[in-house]
Amino acid sequence: MSHLFSHEEAMFIISHARENSQQELTNQMNAAFGLSLEKKQIAAYIKNHHIYTGRTGRFSKGHVPPNKGKHSHNPGCEATQFRPGHQPANHRPVGSERVNVMGYVEIKAAEPKTWKMKHVVIWEAANGPVPDGHVIIFGDGNRLNFSVDNLILVSKRELLVLNRKGLIQNDTELTKSGTLVAQLIVKYADREKESKRDG
Image (cartoon, rainbow, N blue to C red; front, side, top):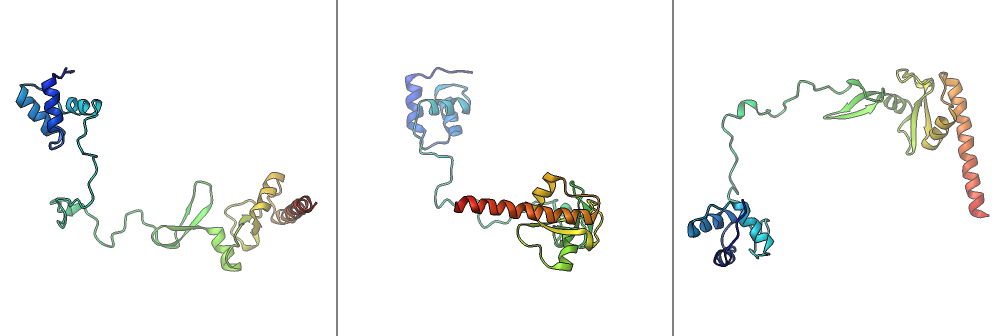
């Protein structure tokens, strides 16, 4: 509901806006002029007429909240609060396995939520950490075949070539041969780049 403010009402707002909140100012206006204005009408008038109130809506530096030093207490909530050491019903212990959305088996390596790819864990147990810029692939394409002989270390660049050229086969030995081809292609590309740079 719109209200056309008189000069007297406007002067009242200007003179009282700094020391009162918008709700207090609304109450004072209604009492002083017999109006039934809402807070949003006063707020809109202040904003539209660029009346400086000194308020930013933020706490000023050094502001002390009224509940400082007080501990919150919610009576009746204790019964539903988690106790220290509580474990949810769906908690999985270290060593548990799950299948992720990509179809890879993951194994829980540590609490609370550290999961690692099972094939990577098995490869690292036999060979040490996977070097930076490298990944482990399944030689026969079967993500459930965790035999160490089926797990092949390739660089990410080699994997790109393997995928582009369709060199990952259903046979581990054929895929290993494909990785040798991918290595040659990557080395050739590096040499080409060097010769262009030097030439």
